Image (cartoon, rainbow, N blue to C red):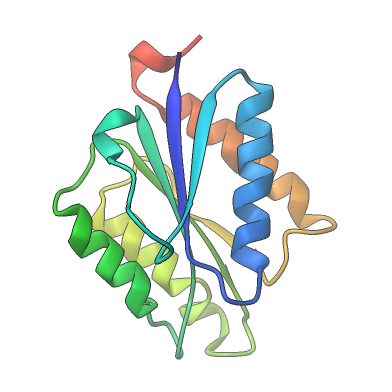
Length: 147
């Protein structure tokens, strides 16, 4: 069975909502998922999963939250299949800094899929964007994971 770890940091609840929507879609596809709210306890071992998703909000005009930086440090290595999603608000830094933390993480992990960028909440029309991105995650998983 395919196993995907979904890790996320969320203050306002927006990134958590995205993580839950991704989780729901993956489970519909028959994929085992485990969710981890970054900073809330012992980190699951990414090596026990086929892929890892990291969700983050963008902080302080394009910055990555400290708890996400600590999470990356605590893992201590770069798992092979990492995909990144983020929430942000274009009113703080405009398009150049919109979801910049997600962009930086995707680059750091050499993700084979562009990061998902959601303006605040995934509700409404953005829900479809989350679903399409999640379908991309499934397609970009290593070949042995494809149904």
